[in-house]
Length: 486
Ligand code: SF4
Image (cartoon, rainbow, N blue to C red):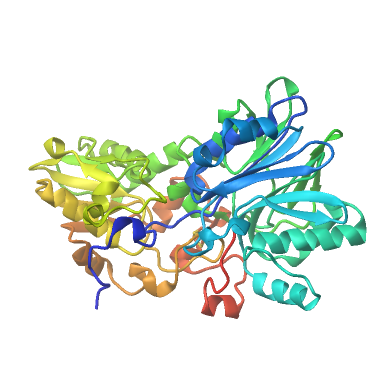
């Protein structure tokens, strides 16, 4: 039996694509408007999470946080930024699983105290041993205000810092205990800290502001670009950075393990104008399309991409196949995760709230439609139906990643295995479900080759089931029993 093929209301659908869980940003720049720099950094990271946003600023005496639900532009007013003065700041944009987004406490940065000292922490990723750690901490009388694993990290750092007297030691001891994917920024009244898990699953980069005005850390290089910072290097797996009046102090807090950057950063999550492993994401996606044309060519009149992430790969497919590239779907960029429910009449419009076909461009044409992934299959099905309604003669779906067969435990919302259509259906069954004339996926080797890196640099678990960080059985059995961070 194929999954239920009802056309669901768009805005109440569970996310069809894997959803990223958060973007983080930090800046140390005495004399600069660090809150505004963070605000613009968060704008550049808005694609990584749209449910809440927050900024914490250290002013030499304490740390102040402003955070709320909604897009960055909605959360902060001019007056909020004016009141957030200081030399050092962090920021966070959050995506969360349904339900948890309603809790203000789950928005980040997470504020806590170590004795009299105030700290704020923001986290991208997901721990796999949150449950044990929470239980142990609860057993010691600790009460939690949120359901995020970020609070667990902050609590551990607090406890270890009290024992060892320095935050950097507190972070190091915490890193020895926590397991999973994490890229974290932390601010005190006078310093910025950043640290990354030993496998480097989630990205974190370091840059410098012009004229030595300060330092910036961010999930992606596009957030350095927007504030005029120059990329210096990645924060290394297992490394901690402290940036203060003493400058940059780096320490390998725990030994680095095999690098396992999330492959979906290359396929979909990161912005095309970001770079990872010295490689332009746009260029990698274009090469994925080229490889797909070589591996799964088809006779057609026009190549279109599903906006936004499918477009660079569609350009590559066109270049690789000689079939012209064109725009076939216009995207309404601003409807996304709105907090306003559409009326019943609008709900019936379904996918049209997000994508509208360019009828004149596609009517009567045999189309190659390039997209980055198929998770549950329902959105792809709607897109195929939309294109047929608009007069497409044939629809050939080409996907720039292999079938997603395994769920993610490291902070990406790909749900349970049963909900992944490729876990229980052949490519031909999926083609039938989505109603395409043909369907082909890029091979794992083809996808990795397009990044210019070798396979062993990546986490590929959702394609091959080989999880680089061990997943406790309890977590495997009840994926997301606790709300995952972030
Ligand atoms: S399991 Fe998939 S989505 Fe999760 S980190 Fe690995 S590659 Fe990324």
